[in-house]
Length: 114
Length: 111
Image 1 (cartoon, chains in turn red, yellow):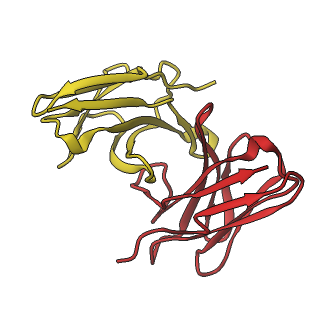
Image 2 (cartoon, rainbow over the protein chains, first blue to last red; image 1 turned 120 degrees about the vertical axis):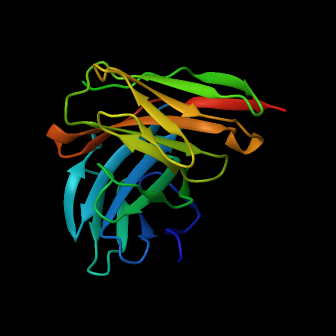
């Protein structure tokens, strides 16, 4: 079966702009989580959506938001981009949430803010 | 705040066992311990997870200390393909499953 698909794979944006990233989970999975990965901070949890509802949230400013559609596809939006938002953004899907089940990660979207 | 601590790097010889440690002294009784690994230019890959008892699967074993303040991921026979960054992750039950990542241990495997 198809894995987790993230689009686009690479993005270059200018400071102050906004960006939307997309994640298509594995068929049948209802949980989608988003993560930011940077060399300095490592992997950090952004938020988790389950059945179109945000269930968990990490410690990120309100400029980072997301949503999940009825087909479980999820989008993440970052507004008013800052240079420090340059990172690899990963999403993961699982059947019930990463708390106590296996999650499957996509290859990520590499965002560069200039 | 909950936190996990891992060594920055470890080295192993091929076909020898590898023990990757993780400290999580602030863990509560309902927090799960997960391990994922990440190869270059790829997303993390699930390895194993557990709550209180030791766990085994085809990839690895997870040994959890009796007081749950530390755990060890055991690769029984390292191969070159096991070279990756290994992340120890806590899922905080009392904070809605919020995930806390360690900085990861970069494992290199020598032939």
